[in-house]
Amino acid sequence: MKKKTIPSILAMKADGDRITALTSYDYPLTRIMDSCGVDIILVGDSVGVVVAGHETTLPVTMEEMIYHTRAVLRAQPRALVVADLPFLSYQISLDEARRNAGRLVKEGGAEAVKLEGGVNCAGTIRAITEMDIPVMGHIGLTPQSIHRMGGYKVQGREEEQAERLMDDARAVEEAGAFALVLEGIPRDLARRITAAAGIPTIGIGAGPHCDGQVLVIHDILGLCEKYSPKFVKKYVDLRPIITEAVTSYLDEVRSGEFPTKGHSFH
Ligand code: KIV
Image 1 (tube, rainbow, N blue to C red):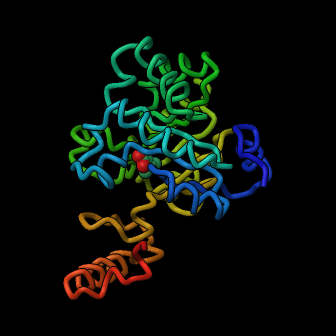
Image 2 (cartoon, helix red, strand yellow):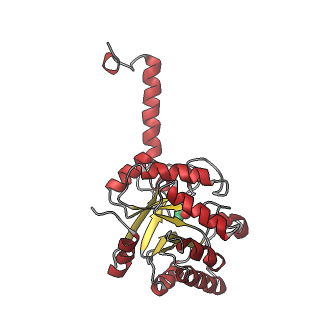
Image 3 (cartoon, rainbow, N blue to C red):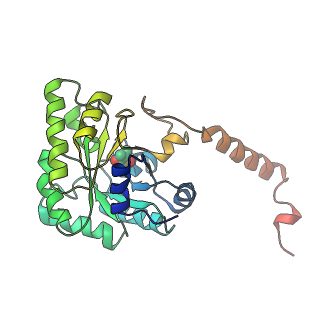
């Protein structure tokens, strides 16, 4: 299968092919999901919640994003790899935004970056795309804005808010983004944005009318203990499977059943 690139992702919208995306933060899961043929791998700042155990994505640093992006890239994925710009890496100035986007590409190996925001971030998106770094936008329920939103709440239910999100989508596209994540918005609004957009929309909790879908890998594997939003579908529950394997190992070490001669050297 051919390497996924920005032009091939754009062609998928033009051809009406639905785009698949998943988050990944490490080498082994990237190897597996890439062999399944996922189109886009997002090294999301959700790593801070699902891997590092933080309550929000706000504490995630550039160093952590670079570390995880490198691990994903070592798997040499065929999928397009997009890395998140973490909180405070692009909000202070255009220079910092450009430098940090460049670091994700130069040090992490990312092929594109993602940042959260609409009209308010259009200048930042333009500044980064002018460096020839492709940008994926992200509007609606934007986790880095958790304190403004007062929690992880669906956005755009009121008509005025919906119109603002339509403006955000337009601004992100006009600023040069190649794709747009729509998170936590009503499905009819996602349908309107998708119909109006010339770039692919990738939904998460935004219903079936987007050009593609993204989910957090730990959510679909049943590895998130704390919190499971309504929009998540758990395709397998790995928790009891891992629990059984770990318990068997502990029992066998305690009983002396493991290791056997076969697991040891002369
Ligand atoms: O950080 C992340 O994983 C994300 C996706 C959920 C869109 O931004």
